[in-house]
Image (cartoon, rainbow, N blue to C red; front, top):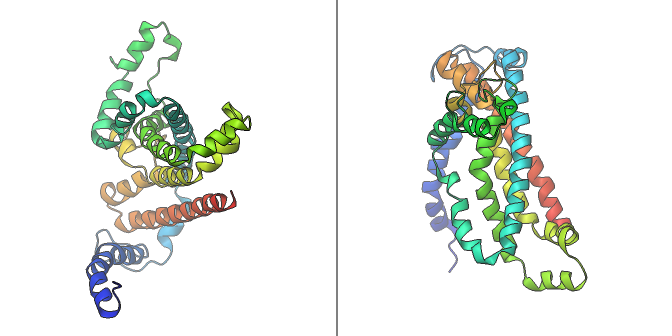
Length: 290
């Protein structure tokens, strides 16, 4: 039975009120604060575009933007490439599929705080397991101060994020694989499509829905990355791991420039929406054209 008119409105009303109170109002209020010099959530004098002009001139923000884009590109490409390989491997090995699939999700269910401190210990130059293993293998030239070197710090954090969510992405790819009609795979084999040829001409097209989901999730998550840089490096060394989300926190709660921090948050929101909508549109268009 269809629900229409007043009954439908009454059912939607509680969710609409919650959305307005916890999403729309903070968004509108945040945009308003970005045009003031407020040092708290209330008050402040109107300063026009001064905060936005300061943002474009701030070298720390420029560095944070570059770091965020580099981090996002590395995470999206590596995470989804490895996840796709794992999913393909598990699709072939039915015997271990269910056992391994359960373990793939474990890293993504861990708290960022626990993961950050765990990997900070692993990367530690003072008795950290990673350097100890390299020392035992005679790979002394590869030993690094992983989180203390500007050349390796950002990629070290990116690796941790990839470690956490590759299994999650692989699970989504595997679910797509299992949803494919087996007759299509059999027909491809009968036509002589095997190995890389079959993957490129058959699998890659049929995996379009899961690819859209995984890339969208990894792009949005990477652009908003905050927890790992905050826990592991605080944006250092020499701003090598400074990200836009971390800059928002530091401006708002460390420097008490609340209006400026809100300005950065508005800019990050716009960036996330533009990038997210653009890549989702392109990937959806690819699904339709297949």
